[in-house]
Amino acid sequence: MTPDPDAKLIEQGRKLFAGDWQFIWASPSIETLPPEAGLEVAFAGRSNVGKSSLINALTGRNALARTSHTPGRTQELIFFEGPDGAGFRLVDMPGYGYASAPKAKVASWTALIHKFLQGRSTLARVYLLVDARHGIKDIDLDVLKTLDKAAVSYQVVLTKADQVKPANADARREPKKLRQAKHLTPLP
Image 1 (cartoon, one colour):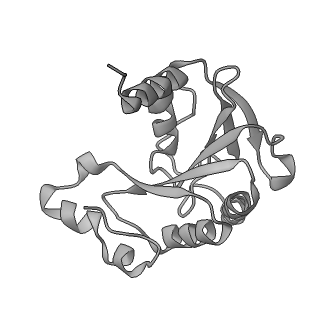
Image 2: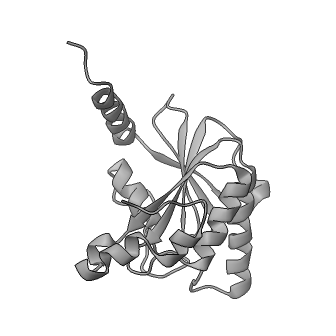
């Protein structure tokens, strides 16, 4: 009997994320990005949506990516590298939208996000995190348009869904903005 290919892939993923992940680089601008190497997976979303928390959960580390209750603490592109030889990086992106920071600084890192998403050849996938309590916003749609223009593979991930009342769950899964966006399909 041959092993289930899905089970084999799941086990490979488990081993990858259970490995030794390390911070390797912080980039406040496009000019300071690390040299391209291997594949990169980025986590984008509004401030305090849970990007850093998801990275910590995936890697089984409590403090690999810094988390904060204050919106706007991550102000650079933060790169983490997987176990030796994996050729795989995770990128914790600054949040966009509201932040406890000067407007000029928020505008600067929002521009950095869009430039990074448009021109990084090693960027294999972007996970766009959306707070299920609030649904997709116009600013999220702007990021999705940037990803579409750059032909970057992405997936929308709802976070904080455990905090949505059951009566509101269906409305959050298929909000009007998602139905209007031609490039997105509603969740089943």
